[in-house]
Image (cartoon, rainbow, N blue to C red; front, side, top):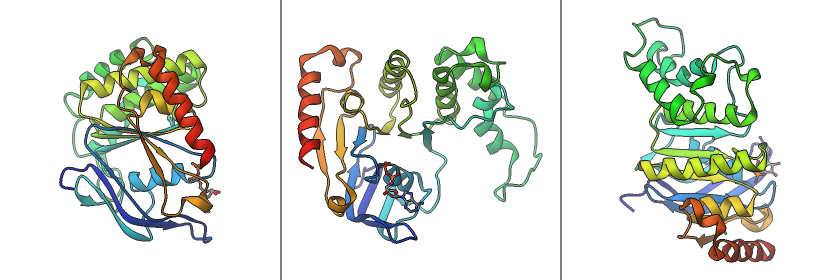
Length: 262
Ligand code: ADP
């Protein structure tokens, strides 16, 4: 398919110890789509996401992102993890600028290469995302001085400042309290509506999958997973008030029923 953003064609993946996670697995994601991946713990959700991120390589088949075979992480793909991954010795502002600074100051070999001044618009880009995520008052705080939700906002800003076209998220809000989690889920919807961002969120929460995933990929236990999966269409997802609608409850129940049969 010419305009796919992520395409897996007959992908097989096994860990070195022989644990096979995917076998002849095919999937196509189109630009701008919002996907959720759900399934029991250990079924391979994170493995699939790390394959899409280019952190793992398929042992068979082909994985294309934006039409190109993926042999390593790609600059236009953002990855957000549950544990935020912030540098504890850097302020919120400097954590957000991290990717921009690496792009500017480090050569392809990873060695420090002072090749010039920081990007002229570095500060304005960082300031934009500080404000956009409502953490501008925390710019000079360190990660241990802010809450979990504020750390995750910092991690999201650090990713978005690099202007990704694909945003991969691995249980990004799992450690947060319910209201903070809902606030960040709404934020993801807003960000999607503002740009042409393809989002993929791995979650173990049925409600989160239904709220954020216009397409929901259900992965069963590994033993049943090899080659098989279910895709549920959830095209009403995407509006902030979907959570309060009868459709939302109906679709959560439908997803629960399907999960129980896998
Ligand atoms: P999920 O995200 O659905 O919880 P994972 O993708 O993390 O599942 O893991 C899928 C399976 O692969 C699990 O059985 C896990 O134990 C196994 N696994 C994960 N990482 C490794 C590894 N580095 N080596 C061997 N097996 C692994």
